[in-house]
Image (cartoon, rainbow over all chains, first blue to last red; front, side):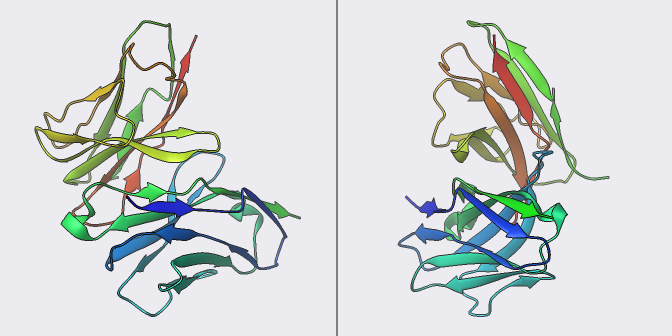
Length: 117
Length: 111
């Protein structure tokens, strides 16, 4: 079974600064997908970024980028120019590519990101 | 607008009662999922379904039941056998092998 570990229960960053959230995972599979989801106080889960394991290039979405290290099984999220609206719980998640990944996502326990004005 | 609707948003249950949480999607997605969220625990998979009339247990299925009679609907029943049902419940759906879209969630509290 796959596991996802987020070792930072809480992080704090000054507005406009850069912050990196850590995620490691354990799997014996070679093909899979990795995700970062954001959960603001409304509790709506919002997809931030997605990475396919077969792609060496790190995914980027505006101010959000990842550092995907497949050999190290590491998948960190970098948020540049932090904004107050970035304050939320951030969850790292894994999805197998076997069987179409039909059994859904395996989540880490989350990192609470605080943005200091 | 396409999306996932969960109802009710808040639900209170007395001990010994069964309650059903509704999840409806109009995204034409094949797969649907139920997750439970507890503080400090992340999201844990309860049940999932890939097609109508078929579903599988997730990691924490004990005390829960589901049905999938229509593609659009995947209700979750929290039975009296679930000893600690107070939690936030999230429903999600996805086209095959693709990104999950989540509903807004339902908060269940046992009185």
